[in-house]
Image (cartoon, rainbow, N blue to C red):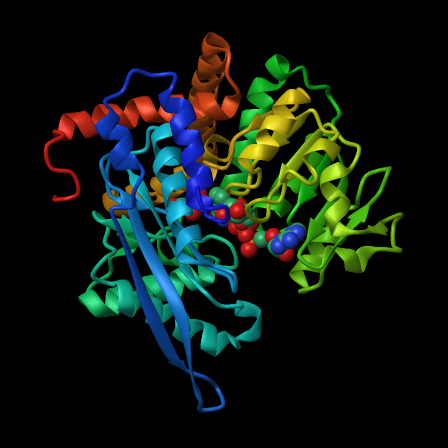
Length: 421
Ligand SMILES: NC(=O)C1=CN([C@@H]2O[C@H](COP(=O)(O)OP(=O)(O)OC[C@H]3O[C@@H](n4cnc5c(N)ncnc54)[C@H](O)[C@@H]3O)[C@@H](O)[C@H]2O)C=CC1
Ligand SMILES: O=C(O)CCC(=O)C(=O)O
């Protein structure tokens, strides 16, 4: 295994799951490789008249169970390896939730904070111009991820409509409501995790009032903090890319949300309302019951896993715990609700958006919440039951649950010629 390959690390989880099932080795072999990954260079006009180019990728990892589905990330550290790994996780995430999708993902290697709004729009449109032949409502359906949002999805949907000469809202999800977006997509990732924790609370032995620490205060992090605080839990620490704050009495949610809405770091609230500054790197070791990594990959690693004091980790981020850290957490009896289940609320409501776009009939927010809760509870319970029956971690159980569905679909397609459809 090459030391730095994120995909190699992810494939460890596939091998672990396969050892608990009797599966044709050809199926495992197929799932070890991305079906197609396209790399392009996007060149856009900057506001000062100069031109600048950016690397971009779209990966369709596996489409056995349906069109590939997954977000587009704008991040300066994105790589092809990261995109393929995120697409691998999407493959398993959609299978865990029994959504009729395979897994995909995309990225642009850019720090969007250095671009003006007009430059960001040109970059988003350039992405669709480059990948229009790869995406499509029955082929590959993008959505938001880190540093992308509904505004960017709106520009992308508009660019695609202009290219194909007609409105095609189901080509992309996470759109503004005015362009066919779904009610409830905004907080769906966090809400799915929230429903999961609430449903398994008794099994997990959780108390009425948990102390919570949240790493990352973007879409996933802000909404989970808000939902948990609203349910009577005490959010004692949060961080973002620029810093962290702590309060023994519980942080003031309105102050944190206002800071982010005004483009400031959570750290800017230190010194007000009892908020104390703390190093962002210390967040994972905060004394709490529930730790929610909601930022990037590999944030809990061999160097800090032993310092985790929480008894439960809810992975709203994709891949926040390395396999080595996973073993340390398990040894210390820390239960991890794994990314492919815990953050699947986002793609589930994206699925609802795609269905609504195709049927042309739209559900109320209450209906969306209800449908999401039912699926989170059904699949969460199924994963819990696999974990108990096989005496494995929730992560291994989630992979076993998904792999069974993937294997069934791969075998149903026929196993003579992979990757030729
Ligand atoms: N948005 C969605 O629907 C979904 C997101 N996810 C995953 O959730 C995670 C977060 O995504 P979003 O909230 O959408 O992104 P976002 O762009 O809205 O927020 C990312 C947050 O992470 C923070 N961050 C970045 N580096 C950090 C660091 N080193 N330490 C602490 N915080 C740091 C940023 O400051 C920002 O607050 C990612 O792993 C993403 O793939 C998973 C499923 C769906
Ligand atoms: O909403 C979607 O389609 C995908 C969300 C996503 O990229 C993820 O779950 O990591």
